[in-house]
Image 1 (spheres, one colour):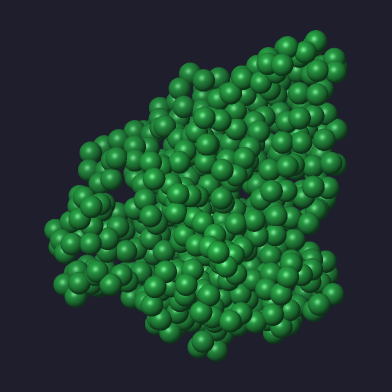
Image 2 (cartoon, rainbow, N blue to C red):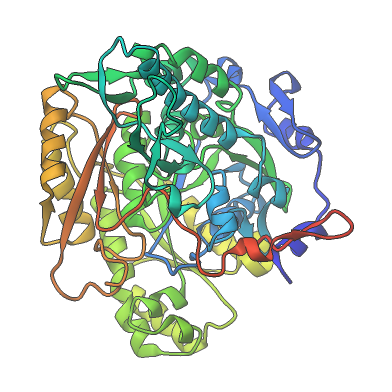
Length: 552
């Protein structure tokens, strides 16, 4: 049975009734129909003195192109914690329309571990991503209007891009200003996908509306002829952009199939952005529950590293436990088995692929956190493969849980939940991989060497030039956000096993002054993805009864 059919089998409860069980009163709720709502940030005034719950981060090994089920495990774990009598909330990112209509599909979990209403969440939801797109493009429009109207600021180089929440490779580079109107200036421009927009990052990192406005005002949009920086506040666009985002700043409430509260807010990609849901949603959930389950996108080398080095640093958070999700098929994929044969039993490939999992566990322990491996079980997994995995992890003294949440919902993750409760009670010695005040080069090298296992890092001439610019304007003391392929520890998506020594190549450095981090683009990464040869959009439709079909 398809995920969408399973989701429709379960009758949801009114979201207000679920919210009330967690102490969220109706005065703080803005409904979007019966089953979706926003919760006002004003609730912090009421709950600010409550003790924080335990924070559980869910991450994974390097995935296959279809993902390994982090969201499914996250939702299953949350349902399981509630099932064993704990008060838990799952906090997730909002799906982007890029993957929904592209290759990966939606991001609402799977099987009997889903959040609903599944179709709404995967499509327009409450309009947050559209608001981010509009705010981003309003700034772009005001930049070009300022230039058209006389360019009093002397803008000579524009670095701010437009954005769109659809995969469209033809928009990576475009030329604008071609209407030949008087005073119209033609220049090269481009689009990012909305999930990679700095506005998305800012929404997820802002602590309140005033901080949101401050950060938007601080966005670097370009330089004048003397290489002096120009910011959004210089073109007086921060107020209008913040107005567009005032509702989007409030977290969204939905529910799991087992009628437990879920917060979904913000949706940055982890391969080209920082890959975590909003700080506001995470902190709100920590005040409303005893346990909070959240996820960071893609593998632990991307999402988890950024969660720990960027989000935790900015929000003064630390996880009490980290779950590293793996699948036997992904381990075989990283052990040399062709993806077309990935469901076939292959103990040699599985054993080789264990290196990927062990490296991720080793990396996570460098942050001083408590780690458990969750094996997201598939029906194609054999008893021999499961036993080999269990034996290997046991010899390494790595705790493991076999999770069957896709098939059994919370019941399929109770073993993981019970182990997590015990793990959360253990002390941690949380630490970062680098100090913010180190040089930009050293911060990038530390992540590349410590987390990726790279031999060294090479910087292009353009990257070196931008590092000098950032140093010149005194903005080098930000965390680094490395854009890298999700399929490999290296910057080459085809180098799955990483057997030979490799280097990371940084081609571009971008200061995200509003988000307060520095992006390093490696390898052949694009901030605007393209559609696959057979995109999911070809199979998405609406039937004669008005039901959406084809979303997975």
